[in-house]
Image 1: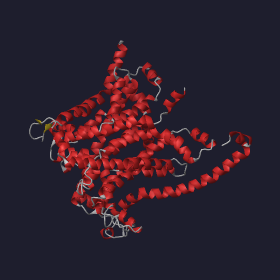
Image 2 (image 1 turned 180 degrees about the horizontal axis):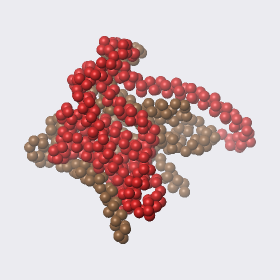
Image 3 (image 1 turned 60 degrees about the horizontal axis):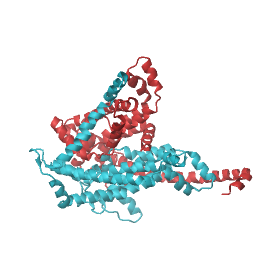
Image 4 (image 1 turned 90 degrees about the horizontal axis):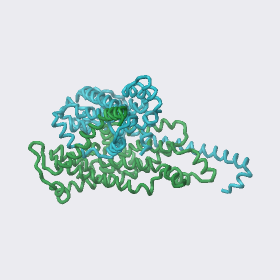
Length: 296
Length: 300
């Protein structure tokens, strides 16, 4: 575009541009909305199918073409789940494991990230690079020896292999938390120390209350990750009474391979807690993923 | 070192000690142990027997399962990695439009990424049901007779790929964050210079997004080689080993037949493959990943 002519006819050119923009943005917005609605269906249809199957009568389930609207609405599949397997126990087991993981991750992530962000000690930067490097290590290479280690400890068929490692932190969370701590001014620490706080008081009373956003991410990601984990419980838990929800779902399927009403009802129950947590935290969560995703 | 500096150093080590302990016990130790284990025959019951490189020799010369597992895993990676990248990026560009209700779409698209994979797999088994499933119904509407999906050696793997693509919103959210970090003045300047939307995408959006794309590519790559649960639940590697993922093979060897040494050797080979591919991606990055800080240096 010729720069000189556009500066000489500035007024007319600008209003022309504005007009074009308005028309174009209208067109773009209508098509975009249409498109987004269609796209939403792709993401929604599977979930609606799950809900629909879970409250449909058996007779209505085995129809082709499938019927989407349950008629009549049938609730009997939900109580059936509890008859087939001790699902409440599975929920309880999962909650216990989730609880210790959340506690462990919050504690260790805060402490370790604080060490890397705020303290000076020989080898710190090298160790931090090491920590980042562990993000790239595929877990299968440590899987077998770790299993053997826990077997030596006599921890097989207990929750310990699934909870204790959380107290050593995870590289991903530590990294996230450190980045956040780095953005908090050091003056704050200095002032608190001047007032007589020791190092750990600075961390727990001054800095952590300012770190709610990354801590929410640690809590939510840990919750969802542990709730959804399958391989860990599969390897370490071998008695039905110790099963988590993920294992329980698989057990349910083993016992009722083709009863899709019950399977979908159970899946729905298994999905609900993560959905609730996700909806409660989704704004902070997505922002947090973002901040990590960028620092690659 | 002054007294104060020494004190700070000690406190620093105390702070990072949980991670250090974890690193030794759950990362560095096991990696070394796994290397040693891979040189033994061990079924847990008896004492491990040193066999040198025999496991590796067997894997490379006389193990059809290994080749099949590698083939399945690589096929899955080669097909899904670019798809996830392109579709995730496209989705994020849509989500970046200034539209009312965008938060709703963003929340919706991300949901599949937070659902338990066991439940998701169960759902898709039902969706892919050859006779009563939704997919084949939708296909029949456009006159296509759907395949038998997880029951078909040809369509089981594509089925698992589709299942994975349902979670594409997970990547899109990360790209979206990258997009929102691009300074708007660049677009304004380009628009005034007469650059159309296509040019703006290729000259501004894409270059400035390459660090995010790079990061995602590396993470997706590692995740792809670890696919396990979907195939374990939906197909058990079948039919005819069509979905026999590498991780499933490791699991079967180590925890099914209790061949810990052989399983460790398999795990090491996979790790080296991942490392090699990751290094390749890293080495290629100067040619296509654009860091703004670097360019400023050159300009100055």
